[in-house]
Amino acid sequence: MSSYSSSLNDAEWAVVEILLNELLPKKKQTCPQKWGYRLLFDAMLYQLKNGCNWAELPKDFPPYSTVYWHYKQWRATGVIDKLMPL
Image (tube, rainbow, N blue to C red; front, side, top):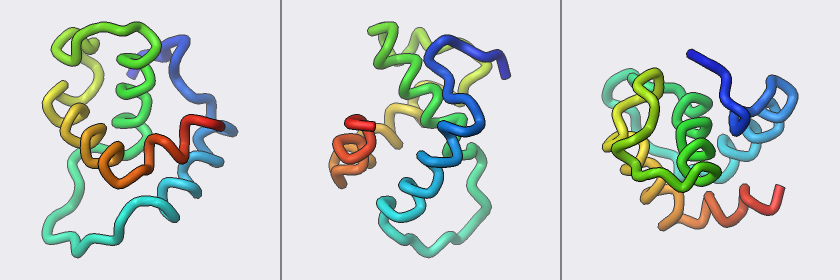
């Protein structure tokens, strides 16, 4: 994946990853997750920073519908609000 100005570096991701593991609701996983949280979060940051439509996310991110679905879920559970003050 390409690095964008909105992408987190490894040290930043280490902090966010710990917080995500604490904040995300625990779910029973019936199958392996196709996209990692880092890639999903970087895609969300790209969209938020650039203000583009979700459908205009670069193709090296997961499908925009997947990114948007996770964004809506994380926003509804308060995860986004708790992460953004960082």
